[in-house]
Length: 305
Image (cartoon, rainbow, N blue to C red; front, top):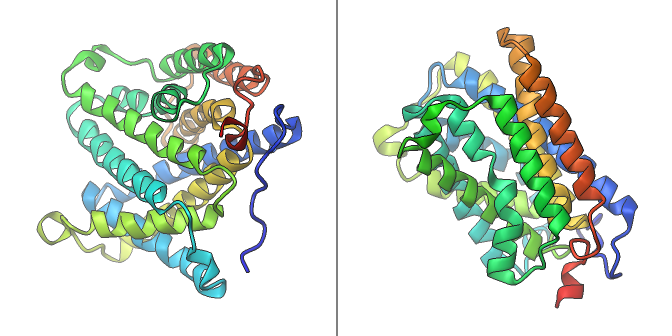
């Protein structure tokens, strides 16, 4: 039997302790995503992006395989295979859009638009599943987006036509989060991460015969770090979005950009300036505002049904 499943909130006002734990999990996911990004930066010196995506999924699947076998067959039993598949397709497509945008527009513009995904979560949740939108949450995500813009200081490249591809990456990433939101409390985070790695490996393996490249000995350390950090990131993100209303904690996903700025300063001597400091304060403030949002955003999925 698979244990430690998140408990779905059934009361109309979500327990603040659960929201706090969910928020901390999303912040931890942000740190793991930033560390994964640093690993990608190291791996990309020798490997093309499609190879990195493929090996990331392969290593993640290998990490999760012992858990799946230990709790077999309950570990892979799901009532939401369609949502899990939707998440896998949307996130893998988002990665490819993001990598393409990085190759043709300035990196700061691509990262900014890619991390716009939390803005689309409440909107997509409303359009697809009619989840209520809380005005406080909308204000908070806008504040968070402004904070990210200050941290990244996007240039005029954001208005290039190719920037729309990076924006699509953000929308697709938001759709992947909404898929988790829809299955709130029904799935184990490790099960969600396992299926994402499995379907992601299948999809990212398609172009490998044409554009893939086998890693050499020096490529494996950053690839292994990428597999570990990205798997941990998805576990933290899934758990946080399962135990707390997604629209009230997903803004903290912005912290990945803050952690990335810190890592860049420590390891690559990328300077921190006033914009970064102010942006960090705005992101933290937005996260606090979201977690203290009104009851409309705090309803559980079961309440909406």
